[in-house]
Every structure is written in C-alpha cells, then in structure tokens.
Length: 237
Image (cartoon, rainbow, N blue to C red; front, side, top):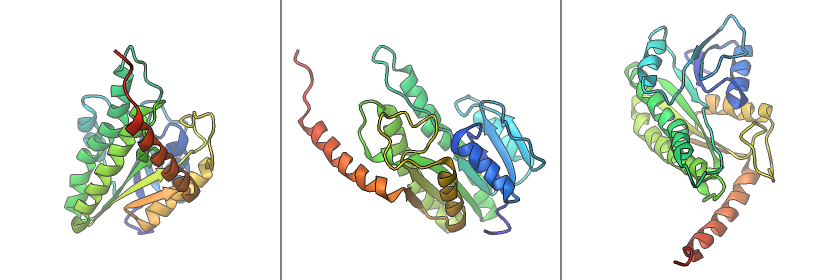
C-alpha cells in the first residue's frame, strides 16, 4: 500500500463494517478520521471522531471543515440503512435514499475536488449485491444500492484520468444488524468483510463483488425477479 495513503476518512463507522475497518486500519498503523451520527467506541492516539449525520442539510459544509484539518487521500463510505416499507408512510423510504445514495454523493462533493487537485486519492463505497435485485421487502435498499453502484462506477471511469481511484465494493450478507433476512446464505463474518476492504485499498479495482458464490445465486434470483415483474398485474379495480 502506498505510503501516501495512510490517512483514511471513514463515514458511518460507529458499528458494523465501518467500525471494524477503523480498528483494522488503526492496527495497521493508519491515521483514521471517523464520521458517524453516534459517538465512537474507538479510543486510539491515531483516531479522531466527529459526530455528524450524512442526511443533515449542512453535511457538506461541516465535512469540508473536517477535511480542512488535514489532507485525507482515502475515504471509505460505509453508511447504510434499510428496512421494509410502510405503505401508509413512505418517509422512511426517502430517508434510505438520503443515507445510502445522497450521503455518498455529498461525501464525494466534499472530498473529490481536493483529490483531483492533488492528482491522487481513493474513494471506496460499500454497496451490495442487492443492487441487482427487485426486492418487495426492501425496495428502497435495493434501489438505492443500484443507483450507488451505477453512479460511482461511472464516476470512477470519469476520475481515472485525474489520478483518483473509485472502488465499488459489493457485498452479499455480512454479519451485521443489516443482515435481517430469514435466510442468509454465504454470509461473511466482519473479519472476512474487512479483509475485502483491505484488498480494495491495495488493488483499487473499480468493482469488487464478494462472495462470488453469492453472486451466482443473485444472478438466478435477478432472473426470477424479472419474470415476476413481467407477469405481475395490479390488483383488480
């Protein structure tokens, strides 16, 4: 790993993959700045934490102020939420898009110009293999991840000539509070997930999908979902 890439900004790191990535990178000798909507359990000389919600209106302004405290050339966006829709109030569905998609876009808005000016940097977004599915139980989660994957892979191609790498890390099930399905095949432990985060930081691929066994199953499920959509008709009037 480049000696230039030793200060990471991790968004959404109070638990789950973000928290475990924070601890792993600190163990590896990185400096880490964390941002989440809750206080962090991490105590380390190489760590600074800021309580900030990615859906706040002034998020970009406040994140730029944090970035002004010192250069950051690696950013990992881990923030993500999801849940079943409430047909009587779709406000929570809007919030899923605010966090999963718009929060990542606002993070890029704050950090990418500095990376382009420096001619280097690496932005990693944690997406999901659910981006290939139509899910009745979690429609906003799947759709927001689909938009996240599509946008940041396109942005990655656009930023390559400027020396800035973008990586889209697409997981299947990981043993976190987000893994709510009744059946969770090929589920990764948090250590396995962070192994893949480290791989992305080393190799800087535009897309990495893990586990591959889950990707095969997702392809089958995606085909079944297309047929279901095609043949489904609305309720009788």
